[in-house]
Amino acid sequence: MFAVGLTGGIGSGKSTVADLFAARGVPIVDTDVIAHRITGPQGQAMPAIAAKLGVQFVAPDGSLDRAAMRAQVFSDETARKRLEAITHPLIRAEAAREQQTAQGPYVLVVVPLLVESGNWHTWVDRVLVVDCNEETQIIRVQRRNGFTRDQVKAIITRQASRAERLNAADDVLLNEDATAATLALRVETLHQHYLLLAGGPSAD
Ligand code: ADP
Image 1 (cartoon, protein in one colour):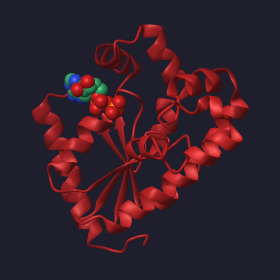
Image 2 (cartoon, helix red, strand yellow):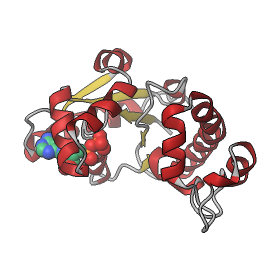
Image 3 (tube, rainbow, N blue to C red):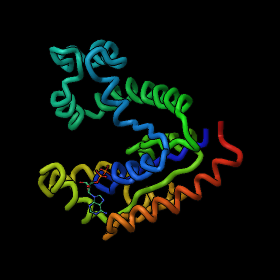
């Protein structure tokens, strides 16, 4: 099925935009949801995490101890790489499975780190970037998560830059000073475009 990869920096509005596509009957594959599931109790990634990173990262209920892992990968690049070597192929396989069983005109695959993590773009037919400026990201995430300005900035610094993301985009959805109605209109325009494209040849 024709697949659109949706990405953007933290707070750019990915979830908001994905909801607007979902409201138009587009099935959503969300790699964050998959990542959470495979690291939940009895999650597919958990045996390898326990074996390769250590049982200290496994919470009593068998899920990933997220706080312990976050603290570790923050300062330990090798641990981060090891974790990703376990989770990324599983996330990719699960996303592919969901993509194949999805019912709809085309599928929207939400991949927050699409630009950062290797060859995701080869698994989707088109990349849609939700874009806004950094100040807007900071204000939104401070409001949404109760983070400090510096905490949000630290996350933004670890992500791809705005320019890198825009460089990877086939389509850009500007989500700056956009009212709900304006955003819905922008999504509708893209949706009509994707319906047309989905009628043509696909990467499958
Ligand atoms: P992401 O999934 O990219 O992290 P979200 O969709 O969760 O971003 O949006 C971040 C926050 O900003 C949310 O609280 C959301 O409600 C808010 N938000 C998103 N777009 C807008 C907008 N155009 N105007 C005002 N608030 C917005």
